[in-house]
Image (cartoon, rainbow, N blue to C red; front, side):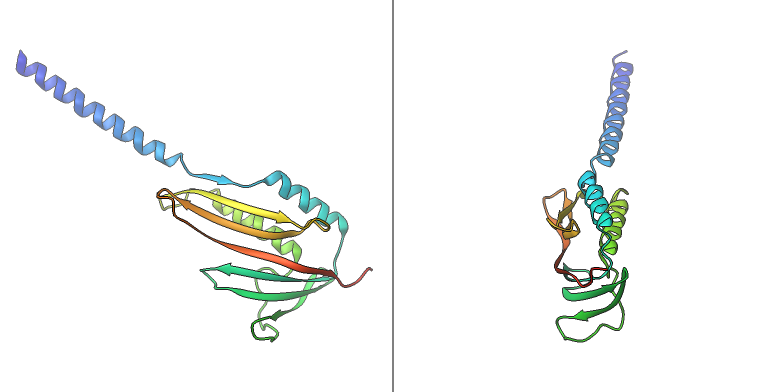
Amino acid sequence: MVKKLNIKISFLMVFLFIVCLGSACSDSDDTYTVEFDAESFNQAKTIWRSLAIHDYSFVQDCNTAASGDYVRESFVENGECLFQNDFSTGNLLPDLSEITTIDDIFTYIESEYSSLQQKPEDPDWIRSIVTVKYDDIYYYPSYVARTKIYENGDASGMHVSFYNFSVTSNK
């Protein structure tokens, strides 16, 4: 009788352990979050597009471990980038970067935010933050940062500043 009771208790303890372990694992899948102010983003994008500025120049200053640091200036006419100047060498760039227009900045942010919605494979990556600051006059993104926060408190990321915006024509 005592032996049967010990077996039942042992079985119950193993069962509870498995249930608790399963519960702990499923909870960790729900801890990943993304912070992004979509309302401000959409408002700024709407205002920028309503201004209908198609001829302008701007500088982008990028700091990222993945592609390195660079500073380049884009010259845009009729909404298309004519060329980019690399500030480090003073030369025209033979290949245009991913971001060549203000609309490209908005598209890039949307793409980053969309990709961050997917749960990362790294279980220690628990939070992503997309920070965007906007120009007070033209409402284009003047600063974009993506930060990855890990469970141990470490963080990594990238940031890009956009400045020296100048309208080059008043067509």
